[in-house]
Length: 234
Length: 157
Image (tube, rainbow over all chains, first blue to last red; front, side, top):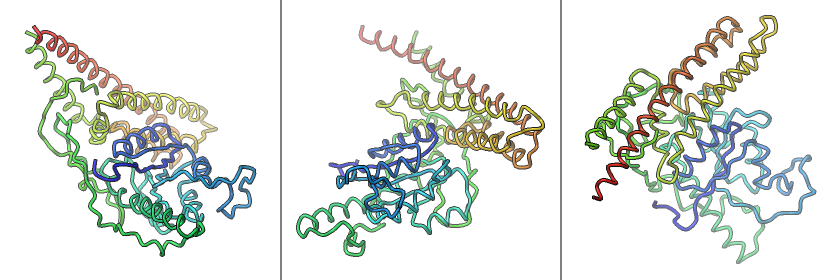
C-alpha cells in the first residue's frame, strides 16, 4: 500500500442505512482508510466538533460543552444524500460554512441519478458525487483529495508552532503541492472471480460531469473462470 | 478419491455461480462485494447478504401494512420502503429484486395500489428465491471446504 504509510486517512462516513454503512465502511477499510461511521448529519457535526459552537454561526449551537481545540482529524467526509432530518446536502453546506472544516473534502453518494441534484452539490463545494452502489474504483479517486487536506494540516501545524497564527488561515496561503494529477496507486486486487461475468452496462449515462465510470476501475470483465479459493465461502 | 470429489464440487460451485448470473439473479455488484472480502473479513459477504434479507423481510412487512386498507394507503411510507429496498438490492447485486423495485416505484408514483400489491408479492417471491439459491451455494461451498480439509489432512500421510 503506497501512500501515507505512517498515518492512515481518516474518513467520516454518514448514512442512515445500516446496510450502506457496513458497505462503505468495508470499502474504505479495503482502501486502507480509517473509518468512523455515523447515522445522521447531526451526529457527523457532533463528531467534528461543530456542535461546540466555536466556529459555526449557528445560534442554536450548544455552548455548554467545553471548548475543544483537540479536533479529530478528518481527511474526508462521505455522506449519503437522502437522509431524514439533515440531508447530505445540508451537511455539506454546514461543513462549507464552517471556517474550521470547510477544507475537508466532502463527497456525496446517492442511489438516484438526478443531474440537478448532482450539479447543486458540486456547486456547493462537494468534491465528488458518487452514484450508489459505490465501488472500490470510485474510492481510488478520493486519495488526491484526502492527501491535500493531510498535507495542509501538516503545514498548518508547522505554521502554528512557529508563528502562532490563528485557526482561520486562508486557504490561499497554504498552496497545496499535491495537485490532482498526483500519481494515485490503483490497487490491482487479485481477482477472486471464478465465473463468467455478464457485462452490466445498466448505468444510465448522466448528462455530464462526475459520473461513476465503471471502466476506470478494476475490470470485472475478465471472462476467465478460475477457482483457486479454498474457503471461498460466498 | 477425494480429489475427484473436490474437482466435481469445484465445478458445481463454478457452474452454480455462473448460472445465478446468467439467470439474472445476481449482477456485477455481487462480485464487487466478493472483492471486499478477504482473510481478515471472511464473513463479510455472508453478513451483508444476511442483512439484506433481514431488510427485505422488514420492509416488505411494513409496506404490506401500509397497503392493507384500500381507502387509507400511506404511499409515502411505501415509497420510502421501495427506495430503501431498491438501494440495498442494488448494492448487493440482487438484480431481480432490484428490477421489481423499479416497477414498484412506478406504481407507487401513480398511487396504484393494485400494482403496488402485485409488486410487493413479486418482491417477496424474488428475495426468497434468491435466499434459497444462495443457501444452496453456501452448502456447496461448505461441502467443498470439508472435502478440501480432508484432502489436506490426508496429504500429510
